[in-house]
Length: 141
Image (cartoon, rainbow, N blue to C red; front, side):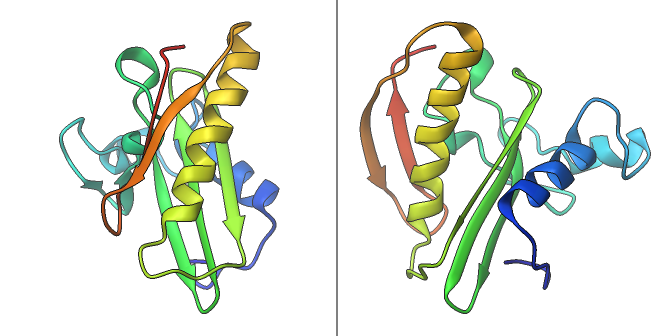
């Protein structure tokens, strides 16, 4: 739901993997590295720092990707370098602060990470802090 792309969440997750994943399949590595925001930056080259959507700190905190919002739809797609995984959430809900994709991303990421790491995850708090601030806080993985 951004850049006039119409696709399934699975297709966008695959695209996200191809852009940010370890093989740099879409752009040269030097360009892909420019896209990755610094830890304290909000934005890289056409890429949002989405670490606030992980609910984690430390190794499993970094995430980057893009938000989408187009007339009745909102979405988020992210790459999580510590797990070498991508995840996309799409909704057919349009809200002023676009919080629902961020919340869904956080909860889904933590559940998927827990399965991959053979542990459990529990999100203990969630709150919206503005347009880019659908944040959740989870127990450490």
